[in-house]
Image (cartoon, rainbow, N blue to C red; front, side, top):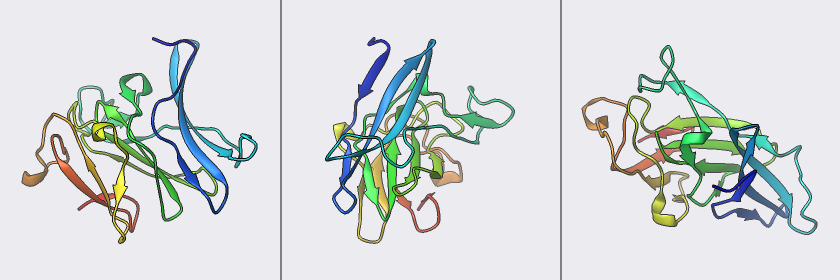
Length: 176
């Protein structure tokens, strides 16, 4: 393991209209893992928009690592490998390993706008993308692939392991 900073492990995204590059970095502080979203000026390298911001979130879930029906993003158990996606003024960030988390942040404020977990009731469905980035269609739907795990969404469950998933971004993020 690399200490105290792992650094940037996924492909950043650049917005040429604002000259900002968005990157996610992994850091260790006092034995705790953090992921942070940065907005960097591509001409100076300076942090912009009050960044970086720490990536965090929680959803309802009954996985073995949930507490009282709430599943929290636990950075130590995740890897940020899929390339970032800039879509309709938001930065989308996917995580591999346990649960398959997808986060959305405003590209103009770095404020979190939405959180989606693709396996809140099981330990699976990480977003790996085969080393590639998240992708979207002209209608604003995101397409991604999840790894091994429980796939009970066809029978009314919330888990999307071993799946190709279409996510609508028209009102937050919903699997469609």
